[in-house]
Length: 425
Image (cartoon, rainbow, N blue to C red):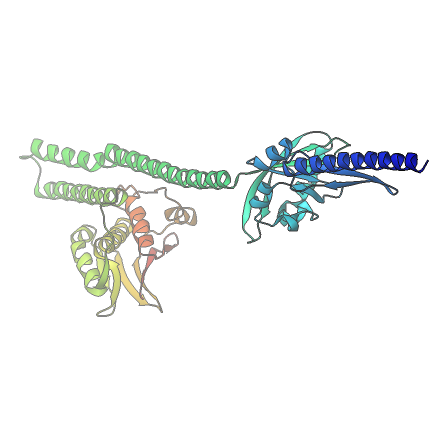
């Protein structure tokens, strides 16, 4: 009997040993599977139910795909908490993984785009949606991300999956292109404006040449033909009148031609701006003397009432053109026997030059047209002198080139006074 019991115990021990060997082999196989990345989780059953232990180091084919993606991958819960992200997403926002998991995705979105992000999540509940979002990395630098969202199946952890693509370089390249387009657009607009101005200048030149310059030459040819035809019949008084008309027409043609050349040179950039210090008293005297012959035809006197040795900073050619045109304009609208006076006044940072006449003056509607726009305005002088208004336009452009002002005071029958300023630094 004792022998039979001993045999039975040995058999039981042998069975227990075989069971232990089987369990040991199973455990070793499980450990090998874990080492080889063939297991994502272990389920352990006990009195408290089943417990699931996930293995962060386990690399299933799906995990390998997610981790090798060039895009970031994130899953978030109902409240926007990040439940999972791959290494690429952590690299994109330059933040450690342990600082990302458990955080809210919106924490990484720029404040200005929180509303856009929330709207995107709301729209994701109805289907796949894409959106561009600006986020920050840990250095506070802005990066541009393209987010593509979709709902996750109920059995999966998380509510929404977000695929994140870095479009920062693309966005910056796009911004650089937009800046370049804006620059080119400005250049194009500037070029178009310049072309319009050139065309307007060309049209103005052709108009003056075709109409206004023809007038003086018509007078020159007409009066000279009369003299030739009546050389032996006209008396000296008649000859004197004819010659005066010829002289006046020649001076009108010369003044107009000179203004045309000066204006054309200023428009095409050939007239250089070279301000220097000048004795304004001497310049005004010189110009007045040059125009005395024109004034004498109408018995007009030109008086320079400027003080001695008044200096101003101006471009010599432009200064001569301004003063010459203002005095010539005063002669045109002075009655025979009239008077033209020139004054200078020194201010804190400017010098004011005035050309005053006691001519016919002008009403407000004409006065307001003279310097109110780029359009030219002209009227007939007291001796039926023709004009184009080009002289006053030149005056305005040249005064503005000096950063000065030009204006006129005038009333009908009381003459006119034209003022302009030059800098006095």
